[in-house]
Image 1 (cartoon, rainbow over the protein chains, first blue to last red):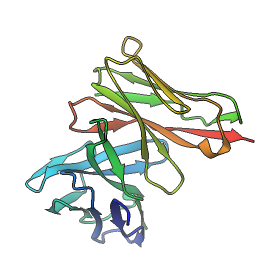
Image 2 (cartoon, chains in turn brown, blue):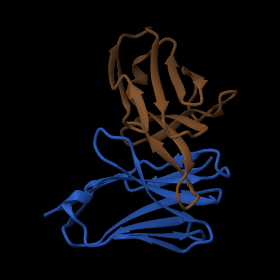
Image 3 (cartoon, one colour):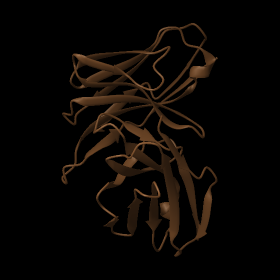
Image 4 (tube, each protein chain N blue to C red):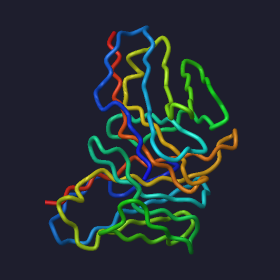
Length: 115
Length: 112
């Protein structure tokens, strides 16, 4: 099983619908992140969480909300989806490597299309 | 705000040559810089990290340099192979481990 699992992998929805993207991890890391990727714009941070009681806005949080249900679960919601939220969404955890450096482990991504 | 620039144009090189990718940043100095590889339809995968007090870091055919005066990192792949074809992202930690900021990535194409 993957260390970071995202569901769904692909989703097509209509404007105004509520969408939830889910993420679960088996790394045992406290830190979890949601990024959005658009062509040419790289990865932009939406929200991040350092533990169940700690939620922080990232660079582009407007129109999104998150929930950290447990150490291993971090979900991203679009309350009312709009077309410019069409993108590839990545969940990631952050923790130490063998060398002690903190690096990100990403899920496989969730491709969302809003019509 | 921090700005990270990577060449948005694809880099095409011949197999066996050395590929060199550039990451430039402005404003604040990061504590360290990371490089990730991303294949189509997949999430980025960590490759190398270099700290601000390190000039160079190597791992197998990969080499990263970090010049805090020029505010630039260079990522080298020696003896490149078609399997090295991917998009390479640099990421900087400007906030003491709280979050990484990514560049737009450079796509590398290695032709046999």
